Image (cartoon, rainbow, N blue to C red; front, side, top):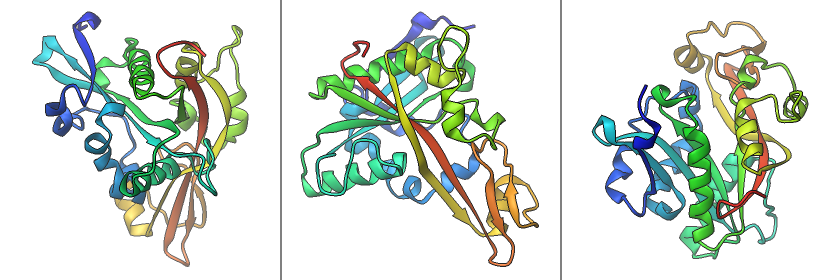
Length: 258
């Protein structure tokens, strides 16, 4: 096991040379999420457009290899038709952040997009350190709050359980049953509500067969490995749609428990 003290976490603004390397991580994201249209159009711009809001971890014992990334974005939640925790979660705040940057609109808050840890470094507390680093980075940009549309890491094991029920589950000590939600709450985060349509992936049945290796030959809900809810299959119309719910969590920025 590698020494956790060999890990260095900085913002991408501090180490811009790492920007091209942050996707070298061996991550656990389901393959089909790469075909989400907002991901394809906008996520790749985040490290360069918002380097002060993005954090990266490297391991000195492994040639300074990138072992975790954390992406967040600023956006203005006060414009007409907007709110801090929209139902479309991840997708919506990324679109707003990109649009605000193009139009020169000053942000009022910030939202996390992801914290991704390399498989070899899972279970060692690095995700918690990355969350703290992200809160501190956002605080340095003048924000009091970091929002997060959290993707619960164990929800894929129970895809037919409604997210609203799943997010309420607690252990005997009162902390969330889900490991990733538990990290957020331990860090002072407050669970606010479900984002029912945080990410949407739509494709033909041939595409879904290619992405998952599953037949997609019957109408109805299909359980796909890694998916938080079933994928809805419509054979007559040759399409299947995955709508992923996330859980909005609110943190105080600056690294202070909220």
